[in-house]
Length: 376
Ligand SMILES: CCCCC/C=C\C/C=C\CCCCCCCC(=O)SCCNC(=O)CCNC(=O)[C@H](O)C(C)(C)COP(=O)(O)OP(=O)(O)OC[C@H]1O[C@@H](n2cnc3c(N)ncnc32)[C@H](O)[C@@H]1OP(=O)(O)O
Ligand SMILES: CCCCCCCCCCCCCCCCCC(=O)OC[C@@H](O)COP(=O)(O)O
Image 1 (cartoon, rainbow, N blue to C red):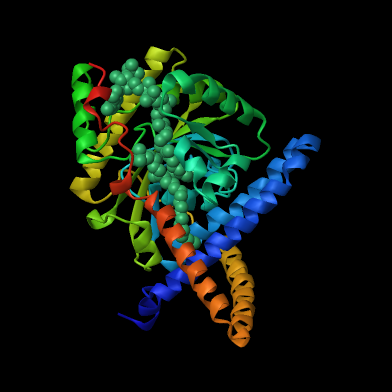
Image 2 (cartoon, protein in one colour; image 1 turned 45 degrees about the horizontal axis):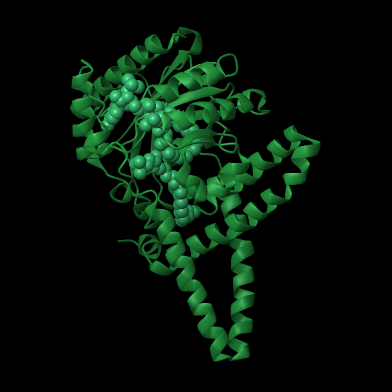
């Protein structure tokens, strides 16, 4: 192990990264809160400011992936579609099998200049996660309870609000609705069987209602669906803790651009279209397993320096302030203050560990896991 790698794997380095992330994130959350009155005066200006503030947070995680862990992200796509990426609104459909799939998504958002403005249909529970969840309120992320009766109105309304969004965005949909586990897969395939649908080997059966409502409400505002299929080389199972440890992964993403006009308007036809899409995605994963690559040419966008620059800015600022604080603390010689500071550090590390836990599949929800949820 080289010296740099040894440094990356040290608990202290990781604690510093987490400290910078948490403190800068809370500062940004506070700044976002200050933009509230502006929404009443100029909604579009408030949105543009929040896009940039949000970028300060999400790009730190992207920088950790791209620059700290050095993870390689390769894009397989049609070169004719490539110039459109980042220059139009799009609905992204991505498989949900990896703990850092959202982070790989963010990396591609960053490379195409839509990181600050990107959106997702996220479970409501994530809105309570400090820093990221709080940031999402101001970015108009669409939250759902995964209870269609309650979601149908709120999700449609939130999507309608995005129609006049001032900057290009990608709207991410994990149609599987939850992360893949063997048990969820088994139950999901029982549902597929009961519906007379072909079984999927690498995906859960997609939930079609969220997709339909998104396409209906963004028709005319989004130009295309980006069907995205992600996998990692050599059966890597990447984790956020691995990234913090400086472990390098190799992500491959296959993207197909499908114009929105090609997607049926009728709900049943749209659902059938999505099921067919997932059967195709399954075949791409099979191709990947057999050959170690996706079909089509590689057109990889390079990583940009902005995420790193933002990260270095926050590191310098907050480490300087920490240095000042520590000097004062030590020179004060007060045992009570020193103990209080240690307690504060422990709380920070436990808090961040809990946040990282949100990304771990083992700690995932029981959605799609219960026999009674099978509608047969
Ligand atoms: C590559 C570029 C990437 C770009 C990235 C861009 C942006 C990034 C931005 C941010 C990144 C941050 C990422 C954060 C990640 C957070 C993600 C999540 O939180 S995922 C969870 C929330 N999202 C979803 O659930 C979306 C999919 N779900 C739906 O669409 C649902 O329909 C719903 C709208 C949520 C409603 O949920 P509900 O449970 O009520 O679903 P349904 O009504 O659909 O369910 C009944 C339906 O399903 C069948 N059924 C029953 N049991 C199962 C089962 N176990 N498996 C499969 N299907 C099941 C049942 O028979 C019913 O079928 P039918 O509809 O035919 O009657
Ligand atoms: C600079 C780097 C610093 C990193 C240190 C701090 C990291 C804190 C990270 C907090 C991240 C919170 C965002 C979580 C996004 C998780 C996405 C996700 O995968 O959600 C799961 C849902 O889709 C489905 O849920 P399940 O039903 O599977 O349950």
